[in-house]
Amino acid sequence: MNSVEAARARILGDLIAASHLMTLEQLPGTVASHAAEAGWPQALIYLTDLQQERLYLLAGNVDVGPGGVDVPAALSVDGTVAGRAFQLGKVFPASASADGQWWVPLLDGAERLGVLRVGVPGSQVEADQDLNRLAGLVALLLESKRGTSDSYSRLVRRRKMRVAAEMEWQLMPPRTFAADRVLISAVMEPAYQISGDAFDYALTGETVHLSVFDAMGHDTAAGLTANLALAAARNHRRQGAGLLETAEGVAETLTEQFAGSRYATSILADLHLATGVLTWTNYGHHLPVVIRGNRTVVHLSCPPAPPMGTGLGLPGALRRDQLEPGDRLLLYTDGITEARDRKGQEFGLNGLTDFLIRHHSDGLPVPETLRRLIGHHLAHHLGHLDDDATVMLLEWHGPTPYQPTELQALTGLPPSSTPQTIASAWAQQPADDGGT
Image (cartoon, rainbow, N blue to C red):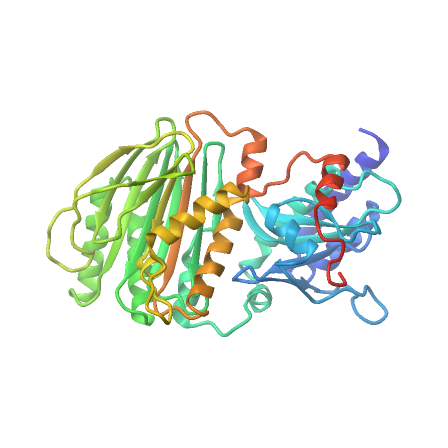
C-alpha cells in the first residue's frame, strides 16, 4: 500500500469514527472535509427522489451557492451525466472537458440512493476503486442516518403523501436486493397515493421468501389491510411457519380484525436457491409468469383459494415449479395490467412482459428497467392511475454464483473499472450535461 492509499484508508476510517454521533444534516459537511483531506475536493451528495426522476443536493452544512461551491440544487435522472451514473451504476466524468469532477453512484448493496460528485485533481487515475469505496461508505452512512431523519424524507419527496402511502413505504423492504445467486427488484406506483399494494422478500438460509398483497379499496383502510397482512405474514414466517400455515395465519388475522369486510389477494412463494424449486400458493391473485431465455413467457398455474380475510375457510393449494438458470419470475398486481388509457386500452400482461424483454435486451440493469417500466406505464395512462400498480421481478442465476460482471450488468453495482473502459463509456455519452 503506497502513501496515498494509506492516507485514504485512514481518512475512510476516520469518517466511520466520526459518524457515530453524526446527524444526517452533518453528513455532507463531514464527508466533504474528510474527502478533501484525502485529495478529493468538493465531494457533494445528490439523492434521488421517491420516483427516481430527479437528483437533489443534500446540502447540510456544505458551503454552496454565492461564495461557496456553485452547483445545481437538482438534476434530472434522464438526460444528464449524473443521471447516467445513477442509471447504469458506473462512474462518469462530469463533463467532456475532463475538469477533474466525477459522478459516482451511491449504492446501499444494490439499492440506488443517488450519486456522489467528487473532484480528482490533476492526472490521477480518474475513477479508481477508491472512489467506489468512498461512495460505498457514504451510502452506508446515509442508510444508517435516513431512518431517523425527517430531512431525508422532505428532500426525496416532491409532493404531499397520503397517510396510507406513509405506512406502506415505512413497511416495504429496499426496492432492490442482490445476493450471489439471486436478484430481486420491485416498483410501486402511484408513489404518493399508494394504499392497498405491498410486497415483501426475505432470506432464510438457502430459501428466498416472496409475497405480494393487493388489498381491496384505494383508501386508508386498504393501507391498513395491506400493512396488517404483510405484518402477519412476517410474524408467522419468522416463527417457522410454512406457506399454507402462514397464509392461513394472515387470513385469520384479517378476518378477526375486519370480520370479513376487508380482504387481500396474495401470492406467497419460497424459492430454494440451490435447486431452483419454486413453491407457491395463490389466494385470489393474478398468476405469476416466468420470462425464460429473455424471449419465452411461461404462465404458471395454481388452484386459487379465496382472498385472505373473506372468512370462507377454504384451504389453499401448494404448487411446485422448477425454474431454470437465468429465469425471471414476475409477480404483479392488477393495477399494472388492467389500467386503461383514455381510449380504454389496457396496458396488459403482454405489454408488461414485452417491455421487460425488450429492455433486458438493451443491457440495462434490472432496477433501471423497472424504473423505465413504471415511467412508461404512467405515460400510457397520462400520469394518472386509478389503482395501485406493483411489479416485483426475481432473477435466479442458478445453483452457481454470479460472476462479478454478470451481477454488475444486472444491478449497476460498481464494476472493476479502468480509466480506459470509463473513457470509452464516456465517449459514447453526450458531450454536454445541461450545464452540470
